[in-house]
Image (cartoon, rainbow, N blue to C red; front, side, top):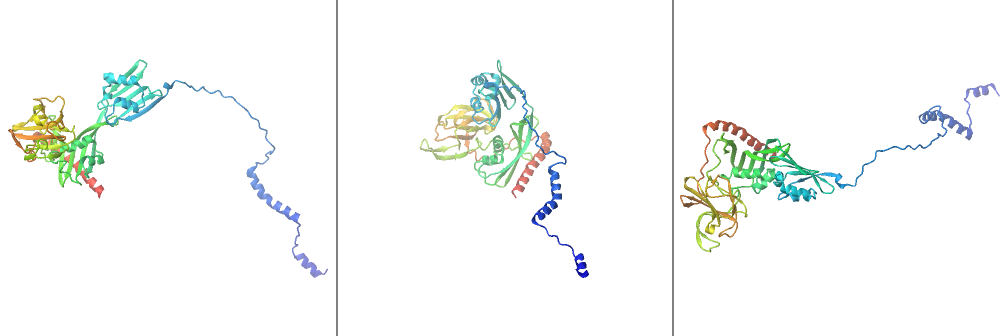
Length: 440
């Protein structure tokens, strides 16, 4: 080998030639560091990987015995039901799943349970009943007190208390679409408040003939609560009715003598000497005329009054303060009431189905008092009340007479009224503005 070739061989890097087995060994060696890192997470250093001996150990633990009884009466259940219109105590107990003749008999005979028989629709009754249907406890909250019935070894006991009442002021408004009661229902007004609303404005609005779609009302009224539960309604404190664009407002005010009434914001008494109709809601089926063909007698004769059609049993109101002059049967009028009023005025109410309880001649009557109920006694072809208005014995058309206002406020009461009227009319006007803004 020459010196030149030798120098070239020394300068070049030697090339290693590996067999297949050598290559596998090289790959294994190159992977060892990585496997060492991974293995460090799986097995701790110096861990013995031999099989660990395992053995089962059974330990008996003493548990308290579970008290089981075959007596079904040991299971007690709370139940609650809402009183429905027309409910009886028996029907209510049935819905409460109380099959307990003994409890029903006690509720029927014991005077201290009288409140249970004055069931007010919408109120709730709570009961505790065992699995055999025996009544264990019964809770009911009436208008003036709450009662609790409880079964004891000796029978039943009654406990009661007078709850703490508070009166809250609420505000509602609505729009007439079809009828007053449909609108008040849609607005969430209680029926008693809706009836008061009609009564407040009855001297200015005939709620059968004068209502128009789009008429509006706003009402500020009282609701009574006891221990957080609604117990009843109070009176309307202020109201506004917009009828055919005419704004009517009313404010309730007591004059300090215990007498209260509704007045316009400027102090005029809204109560008229006579109501426009003896019925809260009605329709005129026959008007005042000197010649009408009588449907029963089949002859022409004068009709010296107004017939207001309404279902049998509809309440009839006295149209003004006065005294009962006559109550009983009167020829073709059937069951009849005659009232004597001031200034020689007499009113007659005929064809009644029945009279108000204990109504008698000489009794003093206030405007709006219920004196009887619509019927069709005497010469009548359908249920209605025949209403007549006489002045010194002369018949007059009650729908054509000029309404006379009620008593005015005294000078001493006027200052207090003005302050109250400003406050309450502001409430109904605010309610109207808020309602209109919501519609826009």
